[in-house]
Amino acid sequence: MFEYFPNHYSWSTAALMAVQRGGELSEVDEACRPLLEAAKLPDARNNPAAQKQWVDRWSGLARKVEALAEADERAGHPFSAGRKYRRAAVYFMTAERMASRHGPEKGVLYAAYLAAFRKSVELRGEPVEFVDIAYGNTQLPALLYRAPGAGPRPAMIHFDGFDVSKEWMHLSGMPHEFARRGISTLMVDHPGIGAALRLQNLPTSPESEKWAAAAMDYLETRADIDRARVGIIAMSLGGYYAPRAAAFEKRLACCVAWGARWDNAESHGRILRDPNAARSITGWIDHALHVYGARDIEEASAKIAAMNLKDVAHKIECPLLVVHGENDRQVSADQAHRTIDGAVNSPHRDLKIFSAAEGGVEHCQGDLFSIAVDWIADWVADVFAAPRR
Image (cartoon, rainbow, N blue to C red; front, side, top):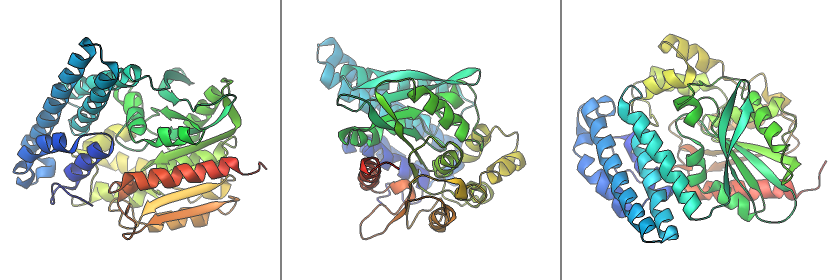
């Protein structure tokens, strides 16, 4: 994996993600180059001064690109403005992910991210609907990316994992590739991520089937969705969420675990205990307490351990794909094998471990993102094209 900051996994993966989701390499370098010395500070991963520099550099870049977008918009050039708003959204989120939730900048950056993203898709005329999904006594914000073509289209419900949002799923390019194959995508800010966590304070839970059921109920109200061909995909911690949902929500027609998560005690539990573990973001422990709705590390550890597919994988009765990287530093590849081996009642189980020869060896193919997007989109299209049971 290209590592801009060789001794700082969190910053390196974030910089690479920014490029892969539409950032310009020269702009990313503009934000990162002044941070090279900060990355060498003692305990840079937890150093408040280093984190402030990260947030300042990336938010400054975001504001600069946002201003360029606003100028294009005033000049009557919506497509050019939309491209720049997209990059601004990427940079705002790159700053926001590393900002402490206890500081005022977190909320400011998140609002700016949402606004820039919305401007981008609206100005460029993307087939995106901003929708709300009924969930208990509240609603979950979601994006529906509609596939072209007449008549009901198959669809994928897209959950995420630990530290991003529905907009980040859209920026991954996955909905666009699904759409090219005639498949719509419903991207959901479920408990533990995005607006559900940041604005509604909804922590995650082991029972992801409840969110999947809410998403299915919503899709079944739409005449443009083929309710018999709706699957689920989720990445990172979603490697637990998606198989768990498929085990209990029998309306799901297929399942993709983009990054396995057989036993969360061996992944997030290990990261919680090991200060030297590869962590997706700085301030990881504090964010984990928020995500899991825990008062302290002990409570977080117990909630993390409750996420285990051991007693539920055999309940999966739809086609299953597990995608993993052989050099995943956050979750060992054996969790992918255990997920596949445990899904004994799935009629069609496929395991894809990306190797060094092809790329995509890091966590959720963070080193070569597009290779996973292509593989997954083709697999789902093939499953939906197969004769129905």
